[in-house]
Image (cartoon, rainbow, N blue to C red; front, side, top):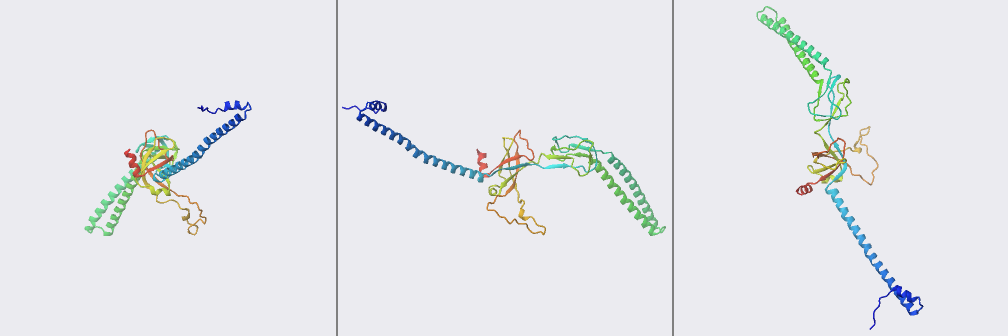
Length: 339
């Protein structure tokens, strides 16, 4: 019974070196078989791996594209958003030198806090003067009234002419009107005196303070600007193709560039108009229409106002900050709340 011996390339190579023709043929056949086996092992994986990798890449790309599309359309988001706040300008209603400045830049003030005082001396003098004028006019009016009453009694007795009585009555009315005018002047003087003490009308922060003590303040010129702490909101500019997925009341997640913790809010309103270049009138009042119309039409961005509901601890809101806004439709927001 013949034993089966495995083919040994090294052993056959040694036998082939002896010059035996049969041995050399066997070695040649063995080398051919080994080469075919190596080719077979290499060719089969390449034919399988190539299409498999291509199919897997296409499937992953389709799934990723679908996920991105749903995320973009079902949950609109934009990186074009800005934190906004109302700025209250404190302009004096009377002129004068600033004798007190009780605030500094970036200081938080409460509604009613004293900000600055304008020199009140001239206005106190005006109050005293108008008090004296009112007293004088009131006495004159009272005297004229008594004179008119006496003349009216004498007229009934035919002691004096009716014309003289009417003149005294007219004089009494004029004196009474002058007394009213003096009273109004006194009220204005007292109001101007009160206006020398400028107080905050909101809760907020003093910003960009340029006024200094001993500066001269003029009527209507801004001296102190306040950021209203109760007025912060976010303006998010969404493409018009996304407005169909945004509704009033939808929850919004606002991510500021400098903070990881998100600010939460909801859609308060959607702007109803933006500037249209074609609607600008010409010198003759006609519409100015651009004659060039490109094939690629860019979607306009519409402002969406986001009301801020909660601000995480440690997050400082600053008007003008850049933000990214994600809108959660009501169905998705309800699902996230349940989880």
